[in-house]
Length: 339
Image (cartoon, rainbow, N blue to C red):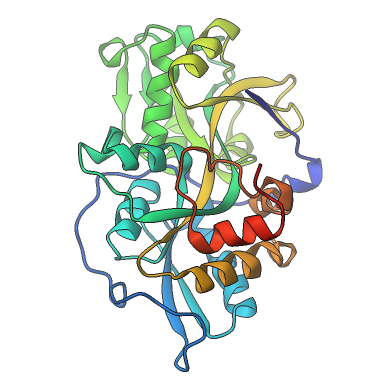
């Protein structure tokens, strides 16, 4: 499946510090104040206080999560949502399933892996969550110094590459692309930093390439472009076919007008950022109210990635293979949004 992401120049808003919220290191067990409790019911007299797990401070998940929480608070009676910083996808999925968080933002691929205990979940199944809605596409972007003579991902053999935080979806996507070119971990020097920190490494000449699963556009790329001449490497057709055949990633075209420095489209792979909710702590009625209150008032959000949530017809994007939260499923059915 090929997705063509078309973004007008009006969306190219400079956002400093967006560092790739697909980054999510290993999960550490920790209690979150107010994160546990019995099943919630919508509209009790004291109201509901819940937490939305977002991402690292300053990243797309974190900043967009704050706006999502504000919209829910404004349009769902008796609801008090706090958006909290986390290590994003893997942590959010595990903690929502374990009833440490009620809502979470995540990439759809680790959500699928959690159901089977695969990938970063290392044999432990997490399945007490449900899909509640699509957020935005996340695209693997490989940036290099435009003056370094690097023309292809194949040229990165023997070079220093930042692949993303350990056990993160960004790292998995980066390694997936490199492996399609026959580049295994011993064929390059791997760095494991979040994209924001890694961008400064590229600027200082300490790495040759930085790779991350990011929104389009992303502030870290635009900030880096303001500091140096950069380019994005494109994935060639044969490698794209192999990746789509063997993984859950999909072909995404980065239009040349997404970033000022591009002079042609870039072929990449991507996944979907989605909203998940606890099937233990959020009942059907509250789940319905959350989906209705959030997605019918998306126009109140200013974050550039929120524009992808405005097409209600696309609300179930990324849900294939995932359990639907009962409240979300009822909303989808009532609005003829299920195929």
